Image (cartoon, rainbow over all chains, first blue to last red; front, side):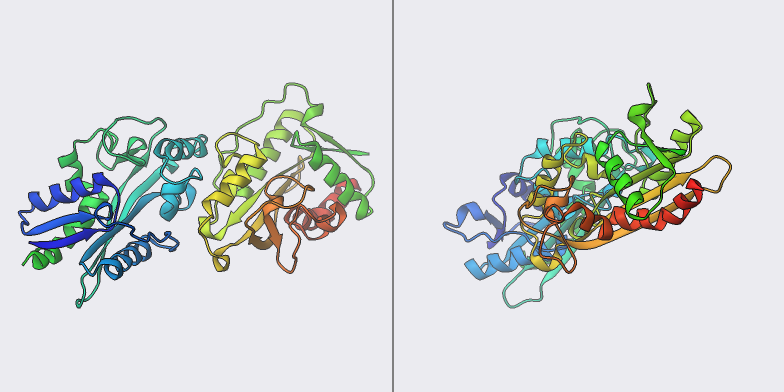
Length: 201
Length: 201
């Protein structure tokens, strides 16, 4: 088994990565997270792009542990907000990680924005850093639009206010397996699969 | 005296316009505001640009009253927010017109943004619509940077967190007359002065 460190403390990301690796038939990888690394020195995300943040997190994780590491950075780009919240998605309402405050703020900011200007996209950058190998950074994009009221209880982050292109359900109304196939994170992780397969040996 | 309607309910804008006209020696204009127009039907600002909003407000005011009207739309463009809050400056924190909530939200959103990426600019578009004449729309830009803590008690809006280029004081620490000469609104109104002079006859 190859140990692979997911540079996150988010248990949902661990479950998701496991599900995606299993669905792709990639065995031979044991996933651990930062919760398994005592006293890990977490650095703030100060990059101007998702790619920069994902890569910096993966590099930090490798430096701290010597293990191959995967890190991601993702967020919602809203056209009427010139692409923001973007890299500030997690702290949009001011304090980190309050999903409800964040999505309600976006809904309020877009209160007067008409339907034809409510486009947006979920973006996910994923970096894989393996000691002695070339770094890999990929990006998944999931286009859609911002609705006017939160709907659905699956997922996290801005899922309840985002309806993907070609869908009528919000991304919080999709089943996990369904979402994995089409979401920004699913797309990015799929781009990474060949590299993870190689890592698994 | 030519009556000119300022399409605003903000008494501070009336005082400022009076001061700027007086400083420029433009007499012969009697200023009134929407507070002097009973039951004025105020439309929401839904445009994608400052110019669009200023022009729409002035056109609405002329339609409702038949008077020549001046309207403005202004806001703060922050580089690290891709130019937002922009046209959403007044409602950035979700509800209209809470200056403290708005500026504190920007400070928090920029919490991890380093000094070299804290540039921004105040923008002001002003529209003058006179029945039977060609519409005029001008723009004033006031470049500067976003500091880390609010300072000063003059001005309004985002003034306490903005330090203009070439200054060490925030725009809320400048005197009114000083600010009129260099601010985004001062610059825009100065561009409008020839037209106001013509209107005054």
